[in-house]
Image 1 (cartoon, rainbow, N blue to C red):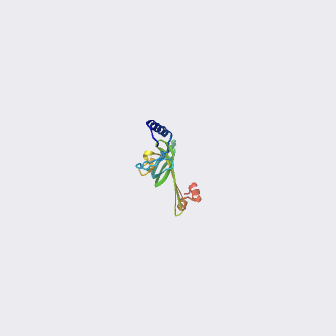
Image 2 (image 1 turned 120 degrees about the horizontal axis):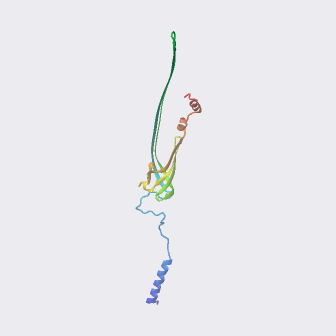
Image 3 (image 1 turned 135 degrees about the horizontal axis):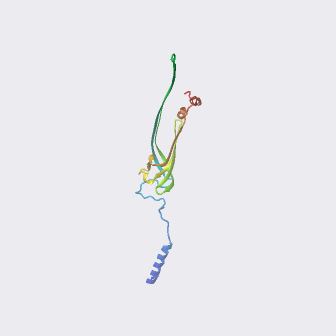
Length: 195
């Protein structure tokens, strides 16, 4: 029969406690990718998606008026006792001009982007592209820029007017786009100011 005395038990306990400091185990939770069950699902790492709500409206208008009026008058007279002669020349010119230009643009869509880079504390670079084909019309939307973490809504979306250095391109090609292009003949007549 095996008996432990008090010294043997203390020695065994001491060996166990000293050995426990050497032994270590990996955590079951990856600290870098861990999200608590109660946290919201906003993107904050490279590669995570963010929905951008594109609501862009632009309007520019310019008006110019000019008016020029010139008058030139030359007159002279000559006379003697029997004859009286007079001559005169008058020139007048008037030029009025006006011009107006206006341009309006509206784009509304939703686009999924990805976080491509973490720039600093709470700043993310995003990029995204969306391709759509409807009845042979190709439409491509490309968006990039920088967003702040506090501008990300609870549903993981960001309004486009909250994007710094925003680049939004909407490119279309197909039958409708082709019909809007001007022919070379039209361009020549316009250049000659015949149209």
